Length: 499
Image (cartoon, rainbow, N blue to C red; front, side, top):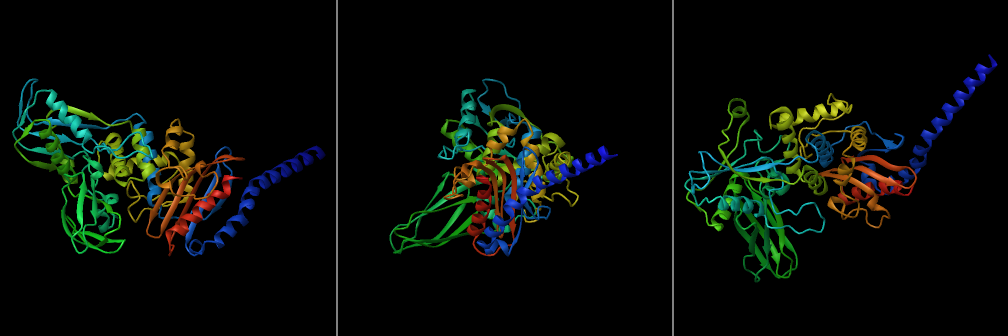
């Protein structure tokens, strides 16, 4: 009996000691975090939650309101890119095809028509891959030139009819529910299409001329489909006050305001409204450069949800193929630069491959199933995400769920690829200009998230004592400068860098 009593006391003592070990890290940071919050009143008055977990042991080092729901903004991309990496695999490639509706035999010089069929490649552009923070964009038309040269090498001389951009792989609306109407003007709100060229956006530059004269406007690529009404005047100042507007569904962009004669050029990336037709038009240009005559014009074809249920598009005769880079490189771009369009395309591609349908609904179902396997549910306790990118205002998740996802991905075979896809503090991607004057910032690998009154950062930190941590910080409902909120987030991470 005495021995059993001693054993019980030993067990109680051991349990108490273990509890102290688990509690110690939380107590260690509690006062530091409280002190930090005093320095950032905008955060203290807002709604914030965070969680930091030791990956080696699962120990919670610090947390606050981690089970509360927050708008995650682009932290949603963590859920989408992890899904794509696991379900499609790091070596998965997208395929863009040239086809004709009729039969074709080698040596035949004329085609009745031409189709450029989108296969979901998000990088049909001049982007330099693999991702390099210092790389300058290359020729946006390069992938189309490759396809055009293949036709030329096959002896094709003439396209008698139209060139059609086929974007039927992802049926449904081009803009997910929950995106703001003004998002569609800019590159970050570009329409979601299975045939995407140059991120479905072009860059417009406004440069000063002589005082009192209209400013000069240029676009890149030069063959963009937008029409510009220029009302920007050059003045004697050194600042730019240029604004852009476009009516929904219109190709006409109004530019107005002033630009100083000694001011640097004003630049903005603007979205197009018919990406498949733009791809077809750009292809016509490069075909003609290769000496292939095109007698028709550019057209586009999409598919509604109703058509997707009743109609299968005839594939025609395959003429040429452009293969994308591996998925591992594609998700690196998506996470590093926080590319909304790419995330939406990845979500739909997973739906196409795993559900047999490239709709948003199929992609959401595939992601819900994936998260269910990780123990993260969509029944009101885990996540409520309605798009792939985080641009939808109704997206919700918790630091708990996000850390659970990060822990699960850390244990997977794709661990190294996943980690490499995330921005690095003070080094690249959306964290290139963050963590100023914070030593060891390059030990933070994390995904940013930002919308109006929303800032988030979730990922991993490599620490001296505890090794790697998974963390999620979400701040909503703040009023004031976002820079202050981001500074708080950076300094909260810094508390753990030297622990």
